[in-house]
Structure formats: structure tokens, C-alpha cells
Length: 191
Image (cartoon, rainbow, N blue to C red; front, side, top):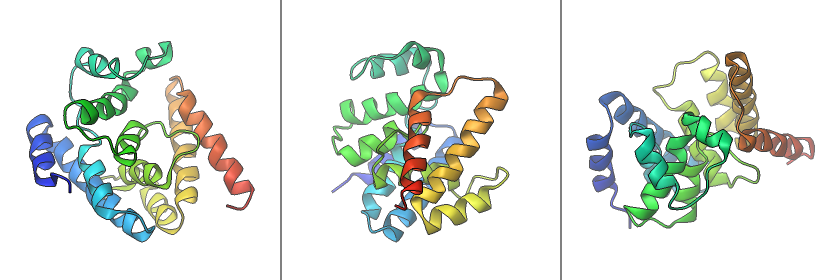
């Protein structure tokens, strides 16, 4: 169904060895999480492979892809860390002809999250956070929470991300704040 080997060769040609290795680790974790949570493991693997497809492109190239599909806010224009999720989603749609909402959404929101994330989108977000190559403080806690419950993993990862961004004195994307509030509301309502 998917040209997985072709996608692997595509990212191998577009990414540094470090980023290629990371993408393959995310793909493996995404498949594992998807299967654990009753979703399509192969589709999650493909989204993991492709999630950083635009990560090492110039900002001008990324912006040209983004502008094919959406208008960037001033905050997004000034926050280059979110470019690759937006340009990656545009790239897979325009260059690879992938229109599967799960794959496109998983790539599009793997950095910021968003309100009303699908389980598939959460899996790609969390796979990026907990892949085998990650070694930041608390990664083992994050992996345990993610393996047990997607919302627990999201709450922990969003708290970690927001605190880190605040400490760096950077702007927080509204999608991240909205995602945090949405996850918190769901957790407080016992979901």
C-alpha cells in the first residue's frame, strides 16, 4: 500500500546520517505505539519515516512548501522550529501524493501538537519524543507514561516542552497551549 522502501531511500538522500537514524527510530517507535493502541502500525511507520523529511531544508524552501497549503501566522514566521512540521506535511501531499489525513496530520502536528489531536497524531508526536535515540532527562519516565496511556504521555511531554520553552525565553505556539489545555481537560474529565 505504501512505498515504504522508497520513502526510506528518500529520507536517506535528504537527511544527515544523524537525522536519518532519528527518523528510523521514530518510525519503529510509532509502529510499536500504534500496534499497542490498536492502530495501523504500518501507516504509523510511514509517518515516522517521513516526519522530518523537510527538517534540513532551507527556511525559504520550507516556506514555499508551506504557502501552498496554509497561511503562516507572524509567530510561525518568526519561529523556525515549527517550519519543518508544516513544510513536511505540504511536501508529502504535493511531492509524494500522500493525502491520508492520519499521515499528513501526524507530520503536521508532531512538534506543536494541537487541540483535538487524533490518537494517530498523538502517536507520531510521542514517538518523536520517546524514540530509542532520545536521551534527555526524564525520557524513561516519558516512555513509561506513553506506553501506559497516550494522554498521560501527552500531558507529561507538553508540560516538559512548555517549561523548556519558557526557560529559553521563546514564544510558545498557540497549538501547544491549546493542546495542553485540551489534554488537561480530558484528563480532568476522566478520559
